[in-house]
Amino acid sequence: MTDSKYEVVIGLEVHTELKTNTKIFCSCSTEFGGEPNTHVCPGCLGMPGVLPVLNKRVVDFAIMAGLALNCQIAEFSKFDRKHYFYPDLPTSYQISQFDQPICKNGYLEIDINGEQKRIGINRIHMEEDASKLVHGGASIATSSYSLVDYNRGGVPLLEIVSEPDIRSPEEARAYLEKLKSILEYTEVSDCKMQEGSLRCDANVSVMPKGSKEFGTRVEIKNLNSFRALKKALEYEVMRHIQALEEGEPLIQETRTWDENKGITLSMRTKEEAHDYRYFPDPDLVPVIISREWVEEIRRNLPELPQARKERFMREYGLPAYDASIITSSKALAEYFDACVALYPEAKTVSNWLMGDLIRSLNAEDQDIRDCRIRPEMLVEMLRLIDNKTISGKIAKTVFEEMFQSGKKPADIVKEKGLVQITDQGEIEAMVDQVIEANPKSVEDFKSGKEKAIGFLVGQVMKLSKGKANPNMVNELLRKKLK
Amino acid sequence: MAVTIKDVEKTAFLARIDLSEEEKNKFTEEIKIILDHVENFVDLNTENIPPTINILPLYNVMRDDITRPSLDKNAVFQNTSHEEDGMFKVPKIL
Ligand SMILES: [Zn+2]
Image (cartoon, rainbow over all chains, first blue to last red; front, side):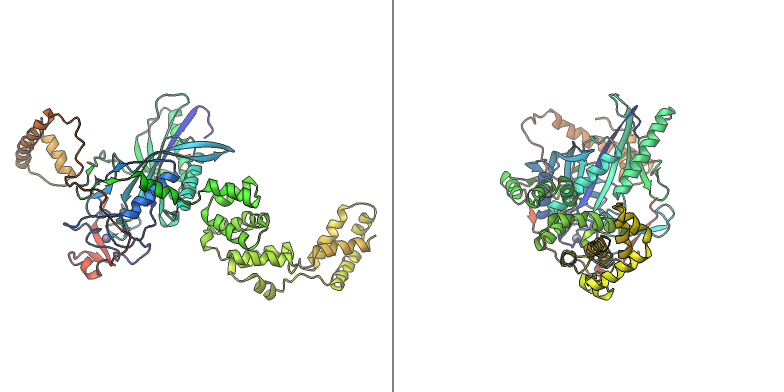
């Protein structure tokens, strides 16, 4: 990968499902997960004689995404038919945009080892999603037949095509993360990769450093998690370098990522060269986008990640590092905002979010929007620490329990008997017990070894099952050992 | 314009239509006549004429994003006997 003899060239094509109520060309619901074929009509089933009518919100969302990604918004745009035979497409053509996409020439900036790098966006176009296929057998090739659910057919998509400016799998991942974050902020898509509302294909080639000619280009389909994107690209780059080293030929082809085996596989061997026969869809009239329309959307553009990061640094005094992590996800930033509205110690909130919360979410592969700990619960826990009901250490236990069960912190503290011990007599008794049991450490401390006190405090905390107030333990020990 | 039997075979393949040898010859002739007719336009000066995307003088025909009821399940499957688990059954794909 870090082989300096070669240069890696990557471009990404990202499809994102738009969060509209209805499909792009008919009024069927776009709701995810309905009974098969219950969100269909003669239009999206491809019946003859039905005309598509464009959903205005799709155009609004495309303009919004284009502005957020620094694109030029076309004044004139049109829809074209892209033809291919596949059962997920009832008309045998997909309505898409060919040579006059709605947005062009944009960019976004990624952070690579502390430096900003600009990745160009070639174009963004609007199109309809294909339907869902269910295969009876283990795979499409071993199934004797397949089943089609047309609910997803006609759901609006944006296809966002990057320039081949990406130079490593790490950069590819950073680009996809940033793109997802921006799309979430604009609220044009919920970007749930698990549900397929954000999907990614990658074009990759490898050439000797300094070469003017690109290497053989391979397309990898269906990279539907950040992990898959990075792993598949790492594998593919390695495969290309190996072939170049050994003088083996590479074929321009489409490959798929096999998550289980950790390799890419050739998808079709006898694939006919694509001949999509694009032509303007005669059932749809052009879209003319006035500058007033664009400006109105620009005025309503929500706060984007970079702006929010700067606001968090300015308003809450967060360090740049904290601010960029918390604002990388819109949902996390909103969670933070909600906490700080109730509890103004922003840095304390940030520490819990960046530590225990993110760690727990990652461990369970959970989205913050599904997290059982709601902002008011986290704040309640912070108040229990402040009023000395629990120690910071016990708070970790309370946090863990809240995360698992969704119970309120006060209830957890009561149920599990986690209330901090602040009774002087009770702590004193434990301190005496520890002094008695550890004459060596007591001796060490008295002879000037400051470190020994830490051990003794630890012993008292252990004896109290973490519930003794650490400050009181410390004070009492020092008083008794004077 | 030169149209060969190969062009007709490719067009038939793209449309998934099986043609007999006789039909291939027939269509090669007929398509040639159509294309020769279109060839007449090549001589016209179209320099300042924008491409015709649609013959209707219309643009921005759009609807609001409001759901309307979808088809009843019986209606969805009324034209097929190939239903299984509420889905359309199609032949082996690959
Ligand atoms: Zn429909």
